[in-house]
Length: 291
Ligand code: R5P
Image 1 (cartoon, rainbow, N blue to C red):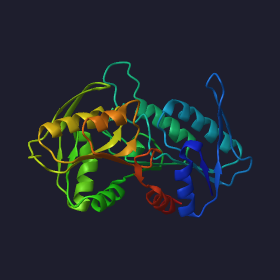
Image 2: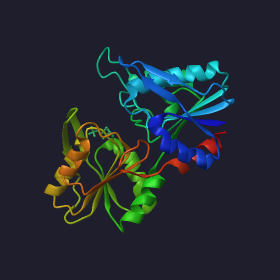
Image 3: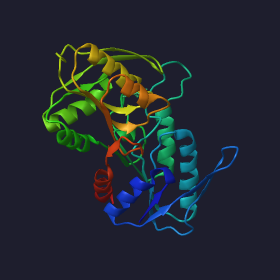
Image 4: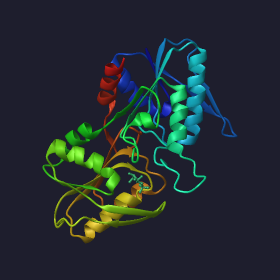
């Protein structure tokens, strides 16, 4: 078995390889001036290869994954595992109008055709309950960072009220709250546009309370920003945020901090200055249980 790491996920893959006591090789990647991708794998590979790469900024990465998986098969690889802690294209899970591409199903099938196993963390599953409904293979493994996030929060704060910004977040917030004995509540959110959020806080008393907003990802940061704005208006004390996946597009991080959030913490599913919650033990245990 070998860990094959793309450059943007190298440090996390190195930690994973160390945990698994497995060798690591790097995929060599180049972008031509017209943005085509060139990739090169080691010319000799063992039977089992674990490809590691989170799929944020997905359009180039999915093509590069196709090139990588196809080349690995041509080199004789029998078992191909994808470790993609952040799995993109999971949010469009139904056709809300005729003609809309259900990207969750389409990208899911593409990954199922390329890989024998897919492991991910806190995927955005809303209208389906298990990952194999999106990626139809036996080993479509959905892990949760709830333990890691819970342990981290417990170390940082004696107590806080956890807030999920929308109904979809309840699955993560409730699990974390129950693990560490913190209370939680859930807001109602309606997205009017990419950067336009309407939200109603639940009826809790927030005055002078330490609040941690928990979500699976921050993309534009407008969800966390709106929640923080409303919490401040409701008299909250310190406000923090934890996300599994720090996508932080454009001005997201600045927007979140300007909205009054004291600190943002995230997992290392994507390399980012906020990525202080490491996932290598979670991923390594899941891989050991799978092989
Ligand atoms: C959506 O339902 C997700 O759980 C997140 O709340 C959302 O993707 C965050 O996006 P943004 O940072 O753009 O508000």
